[in-house]
View 1 (tube, rainbow, N blue to C red):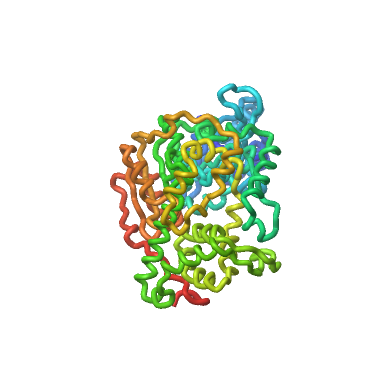
View 2: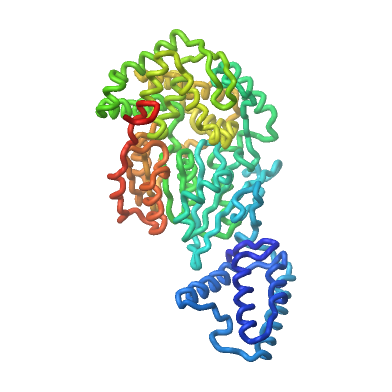
Length: 562
């Protein structure tokens, strides 16, 4: 049976119940508030989920009636009878509190401290073997944050949020997830687990300590030297940080928290994680949302330039179709290619101000720097609206605004474990990609070999885990699935969603126009996800909001759109 966690001080439900009892006592002229309060403040006192829900249902009924919950059953008891009842109840509860029964379900967690997560959430850890197959050696702690629903009749199947990257820590995103998924939280719990190698789950971080713009322009040799140093510093065998192993971890967490079935939301790499979980533990999945699909056979970075070019072409076409953009930035398609070609042949040596520190530095701007920033800008239609103006400034060797955009995503970079990312990509993708393959697929694009160019070289030195050949087969399942794609997505365009949805028998693939990477970032996407999880089926889902999504206007002047 699943139970809700309690703190060393009373939970909100405990306080409400003690207040209700106290109110009824006062109604008879007898007061026992301190006696009752001591019961609810005992350190190890817990209420079962069913008990909490009974109290909440009673509170809901009384609220509708405009009165207070009468725990005496509606009849007024004598002072003597009420005294006897309270005395027996307190003795029974005190005895129950002193028995040392082990906690179960969410009671295994504790109220989060401010450094752990939202203070109204529950936090905890679960230890697992790093080498799950041998069940020997190093053990690692998985970091868990649970956002508990306060619904009187909370659904028994929570939503597990699977982060992207690979390398993002889900638990670190708890506050943001709570806001975005607040409608879901009204009905069910939301659980976030830092995947092994991320966040506080034995992280494999490899952050640059530089506070200079030079980190943007470091050579491949410098990058590889930094990775070697990080690899040597880890107290970990990085071969054991792949997706299949991590999804067995996730199922351990599910069982540890007492959930029989769960719902999954995966975004970007999180879609791969969700698919692998369904393949390995599908009997425990009620439904899944795949937002920006990155399947197991994607072979990153093989199609990176091709998919980015598709998104850039859509932006350039939309600019050409927009009178203000076409007038302000004529011939933009050819100009983008010219800028990147010029910087490939003759990198620009310029003086710019660091967007964060304000220090002026002299740096060399090569084509891969500009290509990388353009690629990142295409993730969101809002930042993509800046591209025409940025290209115009780059033609004049003015890269100040472009570099400012490069640092706009620093907060997300702080939540990225590069070592874990390489453990996944080098084991699951790079083994099936050659440099010649990448060159062939990138031919004809303006991005060429500029995107993710160091990944294959990094994988030459990174230890690889063992991945079964069947891992790359399409995942087939009967689990209801809502597959979402942004039509403007530069990294997981709709084609990947199509390839996955055709093997999921109860899937519905929805492509949202004027949307980049992550449909969850739109009000329409959030509403679709809420309704789907509520129903557990996409069959009759109302998708009319999709037709109302529009690309934001292009940013053509210092004050914005014309």
